[in-house]
Amino acid sequence: MRYSTQVKPISYLKANAAEVLSQLTELREPMVITQNGEARAVIQDVASYEETQETLALLKLLALGNQDVEGGRTRPLSEVVERLRKK
Image 1: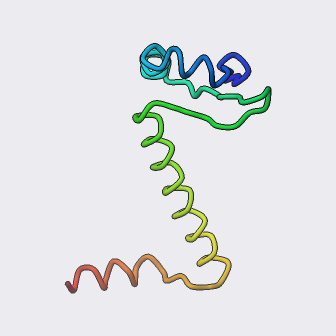
Image 2: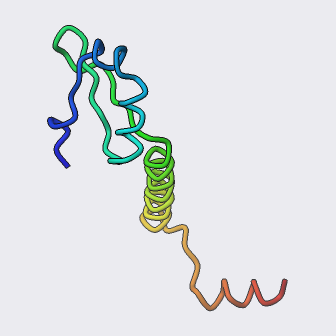
């Protein structure tokens, strides 16, 4: 995905807010908003935002798991299964 195709000045956003929201929902691509020629914000539809947050949460869980493995904080699978069966 190339963000350069979705770059608009803040004046465009102000003048076309409803259209921008429709476009974000339809295309599901983020839009970069510029002010005085510099990128200032990125906007995206809610569904894409939620997916991004879920992905970040999963990546965080993976990173925490890797830290546990590196730190030696693991247990054999058979031990875990046995403990769960006792519950």
